[in-house]
Image (cartoon, rainbow, N blue to C red; front, side, top):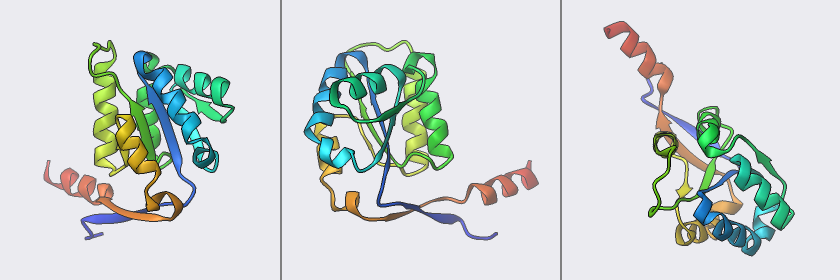
Length: 156
């Protein structure tokens, strides 16, 4: 176990998390409708209210977790750690204070740690969904956490 990094593979069918702050939910629903054909070929999940609204307004099946302020952002982060989410579309509202801002920051941080593509606005989401990587497997490297834990436990 001397390898510092391990390679993970994001499959052709992506596990996509869809999240939006209240003032951005309508924008995300419109975006999902605009990209419905592509999204329908992937597994979709999202935080509670957003997932329900997307399903109701677009017909796309979206597995819902809790609402963001009730732990949904944390649930999505945990699924990233478990390797069950490979792609995040999060239309965040930078102009409105969010009571669960620490949870949002934790989600963004864990997506970075696990090298997960994440879009925080429509332009980035458009670039990502239209990327050639959407139709193929994608290999990416992350820190070998097992090695990291082993080394830390031996030195503390």
